[in-house]
Image 1 (cartoon, rainbow, N blue to C red):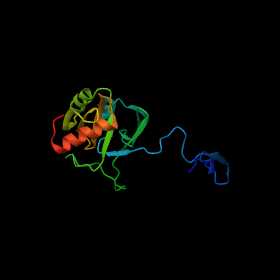
Image 2: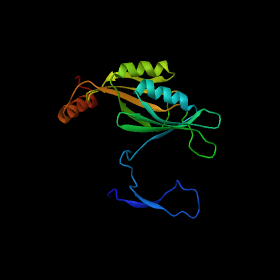
Image 3: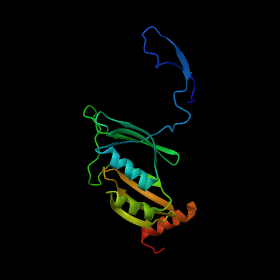
Image 4: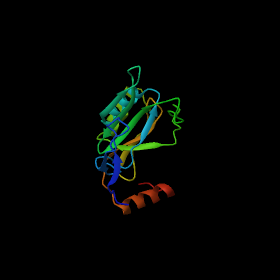
Length: 177
């Protein structure tokens, strides 16, 4: 479906008699179509993890009544992530800190071993240590201080689909590589 223009009411005017409308795109040009939102007990710790481990940049940070961050928008490469505090009126809660999150976010980083070290330095834990994979990545699985699970990876070898298929068949059948 094309990203066509639609009519939207201008929300800047607070008077009830103002009926100004403008043409807008329902999907902003500068926004990805999918933006994960991570609900956290401590958004500041999550932001620190994303900055140090994923080289994320904070674009928006909004404080709550107590001055602590309750909402932040981060950029990781060309992707965006929203960090959100838990709110009693919303059903979404931060994951358990046991690695059982049903969602795992895969992120390519410049140096997977450095990312794993940084994850541990900011209070995360290693669920699967870094290792070379048959498809050409070196990857690890880490859990951040909020309980979200991440696969961090760096490409170390370009492989063809034929190579990946052969390597997978070798692994499946117990043949050495």
